[in-house]
Amino acid sequence: QLRVMDKTVVLYPSLGVGHLTPMVQLAKLFVRHGVAVTVALVEPQVESPSFYAAAARAAAANPSVTFHVLPPPAEAAEEAPRGRFDYLRLMDAPLRDFLRSLTAVHALVLDMFCAGSLDVAAELGIPAYFFFASGASFLAVFLNLPSVAASMGRSFAELGDAPFRLPVAPPFKATDLPQVILDNDEASKAILRMAEIIAESSGILINTFEPLEARAVRDLRDGLCIPGRPTPPVYCIGPLVTEGGDKKHECLEWLDAQPDSSVTFLSFGSLGTFSKKQLQEIAVGLERSGQRFLWVVRSPLGDEQKIGDPLPEPDLDALLPEGFLERTKNQGLVVRSWAPQVEVLVHRATGAFMTHCGWNSTLEGITAGLPLLCWPLYAEQRLNKVFIVEEMKLGVVMMGYDEEVVKAEEVEAKVKWVMDSEGGRALRELAVAEKSKAAQALSEGGSSRAAFVEFLNNL
Ligand code: UDP
Image (tube, rainbow, N blue to C red; front, side, top):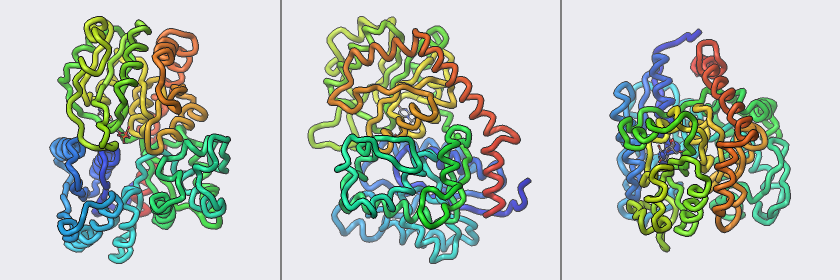
């Protein structure tokens, strides 16, 4: 039972669609429990259409949540563009001013990338918590890494592909760690410092449900992650999944005309892109599989571009094999750049999800009861793939993820397998069972509901 109803919290989600959207769901959860919430937004330094669009959608769809855009830091105008984390550090001044302007703030909830702002909370005497935008399994590894790095004396990259063993994870390859952590350089030190700061917070909210990651949650609670000190309390309050995309999108009408559980949905996060060569391999594989598909295709990155840079709408005729769209018009649909993913995943016609294993996509696939074909691309997705395949048993891996391209043969084989084999059917049954466990966790008396009330009571 909830004791106090007069609380105000400020949520600070950093940048990135995948960090903002679950934080907005968290805001709604607070509001449902009678807690006033303000989401403090950072204006992206570089033009970021998907972030702006996601922020605008969130604000329009959630009038009960207050959104406040922090003014850009004074230094930003004078100085050359900086990296994302340096920029977020500059935002500490506007954040401090904003928090001071509010009469009573009971807690500041930070995204992991805003870890540096824990100092601001400490200075103002506000309890600070984290909302971890990935799962408990990755959190356990992340909190463990600073001590491992300190005792290793070399970079993780140097460990190569040999099995890497931590006390808090199944064996994986060191090269499956996020790219930014692999080199023993300033960037990796900055990221690992974030793990140390998270360990100093008053508690960590995790977007997961306990039965999904029972082993990792136990490791966190048993203090296996940070040698010599307890891990802050963890609260598994998810899965918080965004709903309410574009309900009229043409691809939903197309799905309406397809048989139940017959379509493989291919989508690779808010930032995933492929080379033209890779797009062609996927196209050939899909066509040869003979299975129905719905595929979100984005333009390849240009030579000078890096992940996250704005991209033009893709020219499908130029990118895909000649005649592909015409030949597959009764078999599949290609969507340019962006699809209403959650609506697609929960549609009765969708039967499998080829995903880059971003944590939001993973939860969206699981709550829709779908088997996952795991094709990790960036960030912590390679580790998520390990947890999904080895521990949750909810997916299989696209083996070519670690090679130059995933070949057409593998796309064909895996799509056929998941849609039309005994193994595929068994995987689907496990996925459907997990969907009910997720619903149960969120329902009256469920573990995630209880965890959130416990968190509010501890505020
Ligand atoms: N998404 C979407 N349509 C797309 C691609 C992505 O709605 O065509 C949404 C997806 O539903 C998820 C988010 O964007 O909520 C991506 O978050 P995730 O953590 O999976 O990956 P990230 O983009 O952070 O790598």
